[in-house]
Amino acid sequence: MENEITYQKTYAQFKEECDTVVKQTAESFVRLGYLLKVARDTDILKESTYNTVAEFAEAEYGLNATYVSRFISINDRFSEGGYSDRLESKYQGFGYAKLSVMLQLPDAMNEELSADMTKADITAVKDEFDAEKKVTDIERMIEPQAEAPELPMRLQLLYKTLDSLGESEPEIFIKVAKSADLENTESRVVLAMVPSDTKVYSVRVMGLGRMVLTCSEDKVSIVNSRTADKQLYTWAEVKQMWEEIGAIEELPFPNKPEERWEKHYGRKLEIAPVQEEKKETKKKESKVVKAKEVTETDTHLTEAENKSNDSENENQGFENESHDFENDSCEDDNGEIEDETDNGNPGEDDYSDEAEADDEVEHVEVAAVEDFVDDSHEPTPIEIELAECINLLDGYRAELCKPNLTSRGVRELKDNMVPLIAQAMGRLASALWDKEIAEDDEEDEGE
Image (tube, rainbow, N blue to C red; front, side, top):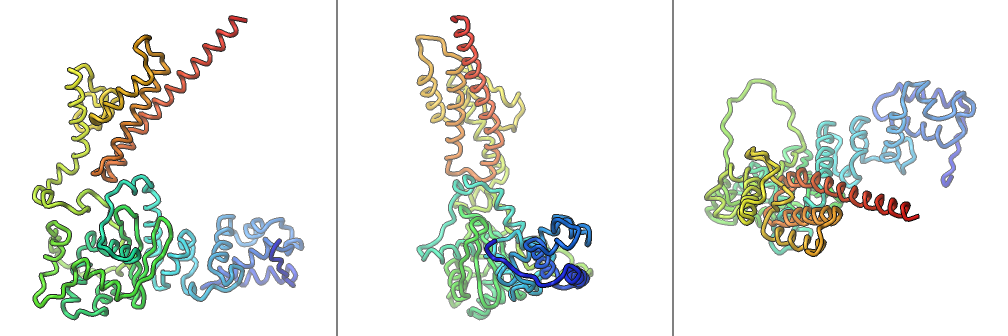
């Protein structure tokens, strides 16, 4: 053992100390974690009837292996030096419940949390990290990249994060704009973004992933939920980026904040209907603002799209495009290819082996068949299945490379294409196996 520790007490004294700690409140769980590590790493249990720390904790205190592991992990992560009966000063005041959640967050994020946050707040932060894990690298890479002016890389990240925050949470943009109009100072921006001691904004930045923006009166940080990389900023830099975005205008008679939002994001601001105030006691405001799901309408729109802005067409666009391609394919083949996937039901995604997504894929399909099927002989089952696998993979690739494909479109494409590709690969494997069996039989007959 690298770090050998000594514990100069008898088992009776050790047991009495454990009894005292378990009955205590506040941050005693850290000391309990330390004592459990002592039982694990020394021979103190030799004086007892227990062979392991798990047996000891279960029999004496009803702590199962999960709790033992959690107490020890909390001590590893949050005690002084990683092996102490005292919490690090920056984690004092959090309590067992919060630290249990923080075990699942990277240190870069935990350093930005404050003890006045509730367990629900910290759980909300963890939920954002968990949600980003569900987004695959390929989904993130094919997303339209968030734009930013020519700035140093660290400021580009701040610009994109604030820009995405202003778009998904218009009230933040408008609040910053109104505050700055009254008095264009950093303190007004701080008041607009940090109504309490700490405020955490989770923002989905296109092409990058969720960025966790943590704001307090003295500092601002951004933690990348995919990589746990962290950048620190000053409020002067935050104010500068809001000016770049257009929320803050240096004009004698600036436009209304709502007009600035519409000008920058290129679409009409939707105003929520006024609701009657209830006399019920308001719940405590959460310190965490979760990221809103990115949809097609969340991206920047062109002027033409703003004029049409047909939500029904947006929702059915990917599906209708698939049908159009299939109809074109059927017409080109003089009706020889029939749609075998939707069974005549409108609105279902069609991914047939015969009708590919566009002309480019059809061309690849012909080339693939010619590569593996010779006109001079009838194609073998292996050649047919291999050509089909290549056709499906090329079709999948062509669809993924479309510039206007959204995250939702990627998920729909994956749900439809992956099972087809898996089935085709299975048929190819069966054909190869049948061929090998047939060759073995021929050898046996020859012998």
